[in-house]
Amino acid sequence: MTSPTPSPESRSADAGQPAGTDPARGPRRGPLHANHERRGATFAPFGGWEMPIQYAGGGVVAEHTAVREAVGVFDVSHLGKATVAGAGASDFVNSCLTNDLGRIGPGQAQYTLCCAEDGGVVDDLIAYLVSDDEVFLVPNAANTAEVADRLRSVAPEGVTVTDQHTDLAVLAVQGPRSRAVLEAVGLPADLDYMAFVDVEHDGRRLRICRTGYTGEHGYELVVDRDGASDLFEALLAAAGEEGGRACGLGARDTLRTEMGYPLHGQDLSREISPLQGGARWAVGWRKDAFWGREALLGEKAEGPRRRLRALRATGRGVPRPGMPVLDQRGAVIGRTTSGTFSPSLRVGIALALVDSAAGVDLGAEVVVDVRGRPLPCEVVKPPFVPSHVR
Image (tube, rainbow, N blue to C red; front, side):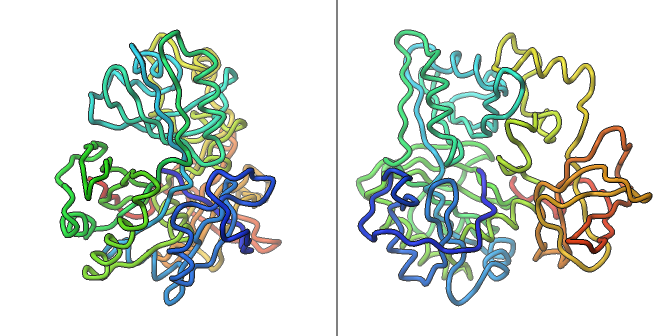
């Protein structure tokens, strides 16, 4: 799913603070907070949650490299969880979210968008089709309540929307050795990409999904919060045997940026439509209904006024979000939405919204203004590194 660009400062809160505490009292803590503390994690707030950014004895680059070369285990329990259930639940969800659930069957998952009527993106999320009468949704942390409320407000009689944000934990096992890790702890791993299965493990119900947001072969495991700690420790022990390690949200951000995956609030937002943010493929254009349909069809016909482009630095420097993008004449033609140092490529990379009228195509040279210093970049086709999700 999605990943953060966290604030650099750490936050602390009462060690006894349970997940789901009113954010006014401070960031929420997930069920594995003590596990992260024992590993010397550095924490920062994201989406109302206090999350591990990196761990002692490694750092972001080491954790990133572990995922690309071996395996990493992430706690992404801050992600939202909600179930839509009742007669015709899948048809109802399909009439609201952008992608077409009719393209997949039970036991499969789909990336989709929750849009406002003006075409802006309220959230991007994964929909897991359990049956015609049940859909499990994983939104972003900060948007879970709004997505659930929007669905609940128009749900037909007999269809319920249950917010399970704090009831369940999500662990991600990502990397070329991820299958070996699952098999080592006795979990089934022979799943097609974007498929899932429900199993019993150590007396607990567990949902295993062949999904992730790193660009590597990987899995996301959904378990009740009380069983999360034991499972996390077992996965980490198995990962260690495969040359892997615990990974924080700092590495998750560099990994997803290398893949060109969008981060809601930066690359997609209420102000950045699917057409502008490079997510038009996640819209079922032939569907009769979904939120924002008329606005998006109109924008599609006219052409978006700006488009998301992938930039690879050809000079020394690292672009960060919110930096101006200039053409060769020095005119501002856009702004970076995501930017980081790529541990795999050893160069700066970025995603940027660029004015369509600027005519910036693949291979074009642009300049990112890095705090007053020009950084030459080439427009490239994402992902920045090869995808191994399948």
